[in-house]
Image (cartoon, rainbow, N blue to C red; front, side, top):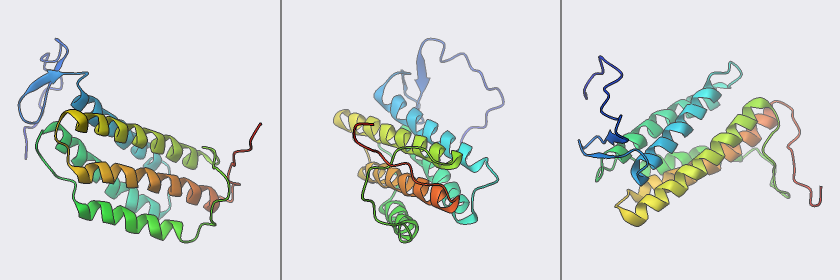
Length: 182
């Protein structure tokens, strides 16, 4: 186990730098910090989704697993050269995605973010997941990045989209569809 924090503030970041898991110090606006900060934001949104009592057990179980994997991904990103997210994590998301998508009607129109509150929050999480993926792609242009982590975020955004559809359907809410020229 890593160092335990007995004091939350250290003042070491007052100069605009932060420590990576490797011990290196980098600017707080570096590509790496931006990437793992966006993953943390995504994880927080999933925590918001789990804070409701309405989450069905199958959704809750999967989101809880995803939170742990996102924490692992943040750890991976804070330690350059480390790979924690595996191909198994990606295939696990694909299996979950297939299971949730199986009962949904095929899409004929674009879906607007919205519907019931939990589905709307899921759409926000999906959008933040896409941003995390973009940040990781940008980082990968400059530094080595675990390819499975890129794949993971791509699949996760798809899963969050499907979960938003599932949540609306289970709540009996009509799926908000885009209409041209509205």
